[in-house]
Image (tube, rainbow, N blue to C red; front, side, top):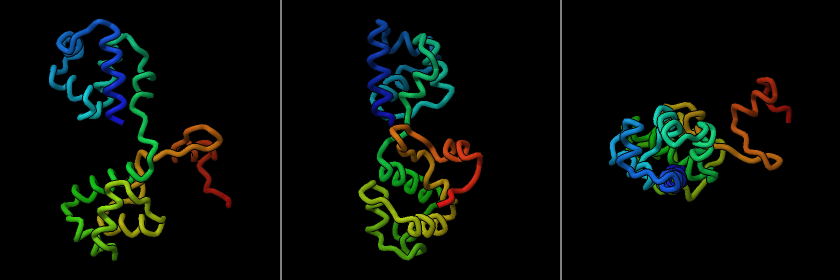
Length: 164
């Protein structure tokens, strides 16, 4: 996500003839922060997106499209798992022990090299003390050629559970 956003930000800034210094001044960000955003080392907050959209004279929705979550479910799940595990102060070994998995499985999941089964995701969530929803945060999928998040699917169904 951050990498593609950075490339788009760089192209847009250059296309408007702005230096990092000029953009930093217009957005009240540091030149270093602009550099981190452009290199994909930092994700923009909503506040930063609003300031960048104003300075670049772009619709905010365009900036939001640039920050779409990764299409790779495994990578997003792995990122969420690693963040939640570390926030809980757990090593891979401890998380694996609590979930009844091998440490290598945790490593593969965190690197996005595996996508867990539903029961494994539930075990992991319980083992590290978070909800399954936190492990699935930011994961989207395509149905009929349209991207839909879990939240938009629920809204489309009127909040009802799947029927089968």
